[in-house]
Image (cartoon, rainbow, N blue to C red; front, side, top):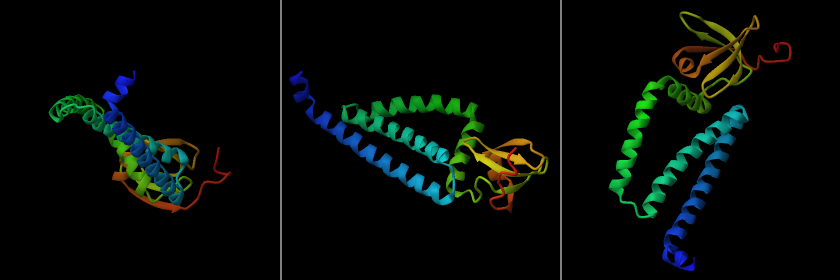
Length: 177
């Protein structure tokens, strides 16, 4: 066992340093996202969702760096990742609308001017909606119309349509059914 540690000492030390650096980067990003979320008045669940996205990206980066540390040649890494990305690309093409909604959810986290409780009007030609935002999720907005109907509206369509703020902080106990 001692022979194993002496033989792979540099790889073990490099792996530990990589993990520490990535954990520090993740902590900084998650804290920053939570502070941005608090400033913009978003829910903790949305900030947690962005934190999970960051974690997945950092894990993928860690796999690439770790394979390089363990001695895998760059052309072998590129072959594996090009194959994996080809399969993922085909799969994502089949579910592009889901990916579009998730990407829109991330964009809305950082730049959406409305928050939970605001009354908005979405100017859709076919189905205009005037409602209060009850929740903003990864895939859709949850809207409560004046007649009490609960409507989900996809995030990617919210970014494509004109949206008007009718009333700020319109959600109160009288509106909750």
